[in-house]
Length: 449
Ligand code: NDP
Image 1 (cartoon, rainbow, N blue to C red):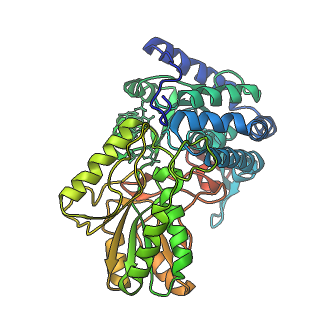
Image 2 (cartoon, helix red, strand yellow; image 1 turned 180 degrees about the horizontal axis):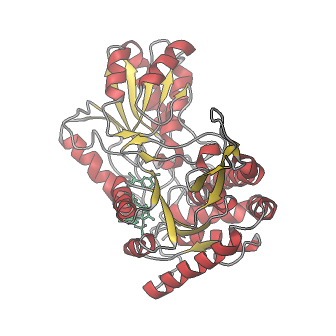
């Protein structure tokens, strides 16, 4: 479905259960030889993946935009970023997985990293190439083989990624796309040939997959939702902070786990910030995501826009004040108006929910202590950011926020070299950086006496 028009583009046939288990068998057979390949061979394939992404950037960017509605310029950035991630692991995997001598022991002992087997990835639609790349590239470099159940609304991307890995010279079964319903994930995770599962998505899906992993004693990594605080202290550069606030909230039409979602303002600068923020949000240009002039794209599906509408309406019904928007425009497609809500209180149903779209909630607090307390009043703990001209003051606030990532004077973002992941209901484990490649390897002790 193209969410900009709500028209169907293409239909795909899902696999049967038997076909799915056949694919697990192939992935396991592939693992038996892939695990013994050299880093050089793996590097050739993953570096080629990066270069083909760059070469065919336009083609893949258009697929993303047609599948889930992202603005075309953001789709291009996503493809470039995937190429960087692939290159990063192609270049560094051997170093990250080199033997580590044990210090502080009176023996010849070291940690030797080995792959563990077939891995299952359950991936979301919001960054359809990036989410898969950050799971697949490090794990294939580590010698594991991977199977991916992508979100049902991005099948064109799912299919293209599988074809691309095949074109890079990866043997059959090293990367497998599975067009399956989520109910089949159970049979895969409980299969003895599968050794781990990584999921990015909602808390609900994460809890379901973590339960399966636990029951079957499989390793898991979960990257779930977030409700990132954006904390503006009284000495921040307000004009610049407003620009960053819009950028932080509106990335991918607001559909990012690390988008800035809760704007926590010290009262002395609140009016100035809100005035600028409202003006900037109101000036977003809604339109066709293929049009370079568009600054606000549709949401990923009609269902997503309806769900957001329900969440926003229930917050308004419970007493929140609408500073901007609050509803959907009168046009075809899964669009939602830029929205700012204030007077949102902890007793309201959406206070602790992720609002996945162009909706900001604004809170005014009297001081830093109250800002920290409010920021931590969340069941999520993914990212967050603090704005101040005083680096030391910012650092002290950042250290007190209960999240996996904190940034000073810039919204949370992701880079190949930086670890990415959360705490609390935002999940566990880390992706990207050297930590990402260590999640699904055997950290084996070799003791030579
Ligand atoms: P889901 O979590 O439902 O989808 C993510 C992936 O998980 C998809 O591949 C989906 O498959 C799969 N999945 C869903 N339920 C299960 C299950 N029980 N067992 C195995 N796999 C499952 O996200 P939604 O698209 O429904 O979005 C709902 C909300 O989740 C958003 O509004 C947002 O708050 C949050 N979200 C957060 C993301 C993030 O980056 N942290 C990304 C996406 C969503 P299928 O598509 O076939 O249902």
